[in-house]
Image 1: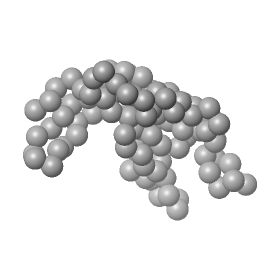
Image 2 (image 1 turned 30 degrees about the horizontal axis):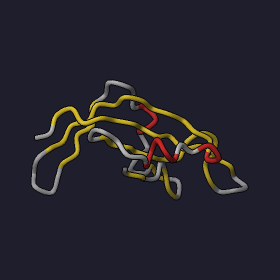
Image 3 (image 1 turned 45 degrees about the vertical axis):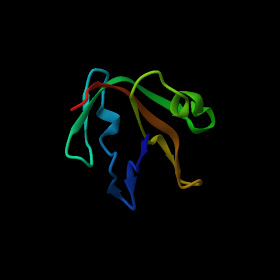
Length: 96
């Protein structure tokens, strides 16, 4: 599970383009040992922060998976926060 900002202080964050990810896209993760793990996006969900799918994000898997989380939806000026979360669910397809 990796979480990152969609933006910060008016500048794009590490997950600024996460909203453009679609099922079937591949995500490559460079490991500390120099190998690359490749994950295929299975689902992209948009969830109200009050309906965050905790079990789906943090629950046990029977396979290697990746979850990417950032803020999304409408920015609430009063709360100084986005109202939703964008969550990418991906499954390992090619360990190196």
